[in-house]
Each structure stands twice: as C-alpha cells, then as structure tokens.
Figure 1: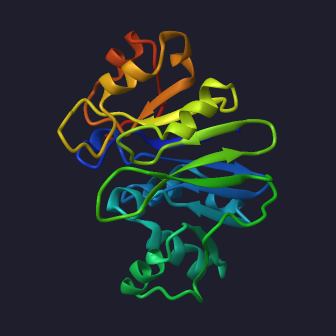
Figure 2: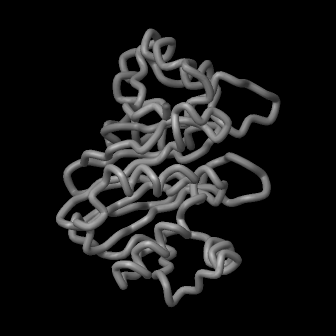
Length: 231
C-alpha cells in the first residue's frame, strides 16, 4: 500500500506543506485529508483525469486538513460531472461544506468507507487533539498490510500501540511535534521516544512537523515521511 505524501508540515510551518497523502490505484484516487495546499498539488502532480472515483478520508476539520476540499469537490462535479466520496465519522463536514455553498447533490457523504476497487478499509480511531472537535486516526488495510495514520493527535491510542507491538500494524504514521505544553494537541517527540523502543522506530514515520527537525528524528531511529518542500 503505497501512499504519496502531499506534504509533511503542520499548519504553522508552511515550508513543508499540508500533511496529507494520496494513492491512485485501479483508476480510483484515495486521499488522506485535503488541506489548503492540497488541491493545487494534486492538480499539478496527481493525474486527476485518470480518476474514475475519488475517496477523501478526513481525520478532522481544521483548515490545514480540509481547506481545499470544497475546491476538489467543485472541480470534479463541475468539470467531470462526478460526485466524489467524502468519508468522515462526523456529519459536521456536511454543515461545513454547506457554508461554502456545496450541498450533498455535489458529493457523496459517507460516515464509513464505502466499497472500492482497492479493497481499502479505513477503520476510524478516536484520538486526542483538541477539546472542541472530534478527531480521528485511521487503521488502513488493503488485505495485504495494515497501517495506522494518526491525523493530528497528541498521543498514540493504547489500543493502537498494543496492535503495533503485537505485529498487527506494519507501519505507523504519527503526528510529531518539537513543542511541548501542559495541554498538548500534537505528539511531543520526547513522548514518542519514551513510548517506542529503538528496535521498533524504523516502522514509525513522523509527519505534521512544526520545524526542520527531520534529521534529529532520524538520528533517534525514527523515519520521516518524504514529501516535497514548498519553495
């Protein structure tokens, strides 16, 4: 299951773009989030014309994760006469899109991942990020491997850690921050370092970076997702 990352940055570190990823498989486009910079990148690099169906799996509704979702919906609906699938456990996204003038006749809202050609399953996992919004990570499986994608989260859920250390998760993609606080919204790297033993770190991919900290994380044994920098 190969995901190409659109960006690897936090909302406040635009040189690394918006964290998110895409996969084009069997003429279907799968997206993990769709932040402010995502549509521009996808338009230039993702061969949108090849997509016969589009599935956007949303972790939460902050702008760096949904900021160009409306544009993506409008692009396919207006130019391709196609309704893409917007997947999120909370129907708040429907209200958000309605404020942009997009009703559900322009897209399909799905609380759970619908059937698709890749056999991709996306099981939502509630995560801690902010107090005023429900946020999710996902266990993503295509029948060959399973990965965990955290979205924005200040910690790895206990159940996910248990699955990971039991060998049931092949790769773990985790929001990682160099900033700590008493009430964190992102996962401080020292917390990640304390919870992931060195022998497991080559399966942990850090993302949503808030500074050019990639080399430091690699020195500690973690991996960092590969994504283009914004000039």
